[in-house]
Image 1 (tube, helix red, strand yellow):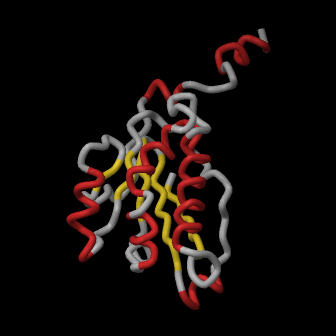
Image 2 (tube, helix red, strand yellow; image 1 turned 90 degrees about the vertical axis):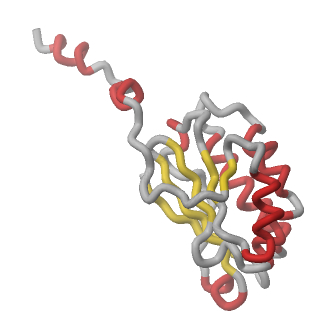
Length: 161
């Protein structure tokens, strides 16, 4: 499921506040899944608490944004500043598809120019953070997840007999 979310930064909110909104959106989306433990997303992003706001303030998340990828989930989150931030219509609700997230989720960060070395160092030890180019689409869900349903089709077929 491919989605885009926009978050307003300065002058609507500070870079630190925008980073917290971004962190909350990612946490609320992924932690709806039973495969992602509560608090784990924020803990992963805590390594970037000083760097995240710097990426926002420097405009590094404006054009490409960061990309959350998991099985069946591909979300681009862009953080806008200046006039664009004043016009943005935010949707900060959890992204649909997060309930089926796995522990294999990854957040891809775009190139950050002068912050590249610091960003690479901050994400290198995390299995969930990357500075590599994100995949163009979400990986397909595993077949057992696709076949899992709240409705037992076989039981419904037996109702007519």
